[in-house]
Amino acid sequence: MPRYQGRCHCGSIKFSFVAPAIKNGLRCNCSICIKKGAMIGDFIVAPEEMKIEVAENALATYQFATHVGKHHFCKTCGIYPFHQTLRKPGHYRVNLGCVEGVDTLSLPHKLIDGAAL
Ligand SMILES: [Zn+2]
Image 1: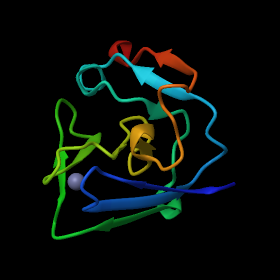
Image 2 (image 1 turned 120 degrees about the vertical axis):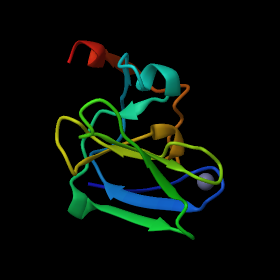
Image 3 (image 1 turned 30 degrees about the horizontal axis):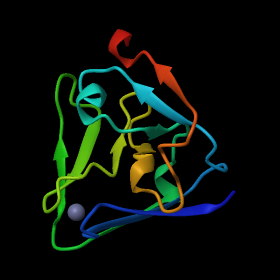
Image 4 (image 1 turned 135 degrees about the horizontal axis):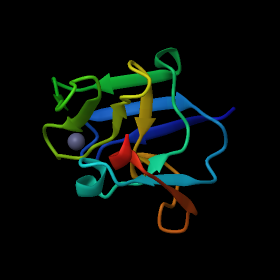
């Protein structure tokens, strides 16, 4: 499986992960995804496959409701690069818009009904 590189807008948060070739994305209608408008990967990254480099404490975390999911964003540029998923605590889903070489505007995607979960 390839290792992908990603970063927030300002580069304070850099990350890389191993995943199957990215050919699809997901959009979710839960209360936070609908506001972010981001396309997320259709795969979940195990913590040992995720490498995260953060400059000067730039990583902030937002939690709500059950406080199980961890929604990370960059304190400098505000971009959401990845989150730790509610359904598999400690594992990550990534914002495909932050991943090098992925064109989210031309990527087919599915909808997931996160609002119903
Ligand atoms: Zn940033």
